[in-house]
Image (cartoon, rainbow over all chains, first blue to last red; front, side, top):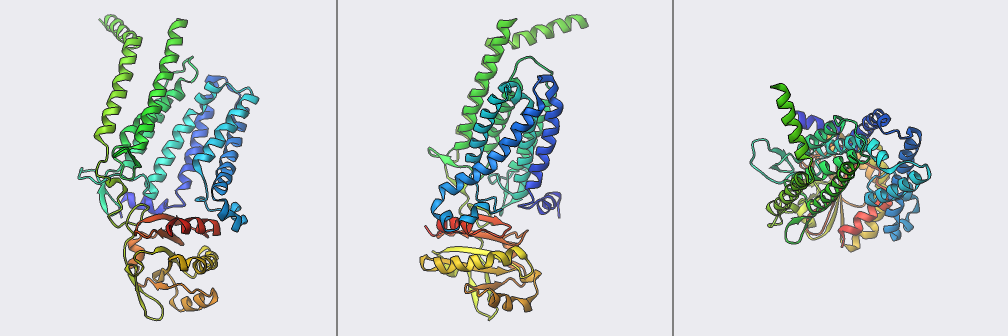
Length: 245
Length: 196
């Protein structure tokens, strides 16, 4: 049994969630260490995280139930089920983002510095998600003959999960080695730019992409648009900085 | 000499940070991204991988042929054109026991609409004498298959019990649920999806 099989056996779903929880814990620790340079109230930020997490879980489940109302009305107790599949993750994320925004305004948390403080958490979570992909075999690569191909789902494939882990580790390292700078939002935008750029590249090697418009990969188009927005943000910040000088 | 090098380094860094250089760099990255999107486009639609058998969502369901406790042989090919739920279980597994009544209930409800349930007992890790009493205890009417040599478990890369595969009428796996017990809503959502 090779290392990859051993890893996949140990963290086979649903145990792959352990990797995400572990990454969240490491990310929170890094964010706490990162906080002093941004002068953000850590207690308020911890409350924001907790409230966002609860909103994500409750919002994702309630939205899923509403989308499948006819089914849930036949077994209403299923709304309390521990099955993680009964969950609308994008809906949950949207609810969490709205809640975080509202709470942040009420607690007078500055948005950009708060996002900067949380950037190591986001970057660590990206590593956790990539590791869980490797454990579950999700986000697999397309067939290839490259020497570093891995045998997965009945074929030799690009090890896209390993590309993903490498890219997210590099992103975290780049974030952590940034010198303290005065531009609020810079680290967050840098994280967004690096993450979307790596997704844009890696998606091209994936074997499970959603295809649109005659074979274009939907995730690549979304990643390109996000990268464009991140560059606009970084450029705007730099311009403000230049004007100050 | 060192001072001169530092001076040039400083000038280069300053130049790079000038708007024209910065924006050119962004434009080059974005243009390269656009080129990559078109170069890596999947025009043959092979990304869905619906043609090769593998135990993963989006792939063809691997085929197996197993026997029931009374010796009847059942193959996956017998269910061709029908929606299939393959549920791997064992008598000692508490979540498997917990979800059996719900699977049976929904099998009764949906079998007329073309749902086939194959309960694959992971016999290689179970006590064979306990299987028939288990079937009787839970009044199971769908076929229970004995995976004596672990052939189906290997084909489906079974790592946890229970594990369920929801397979559409086209033979493609639509959802994989690892662990349990599955709630009624989860079963119903996936069954509704595969019987379409």
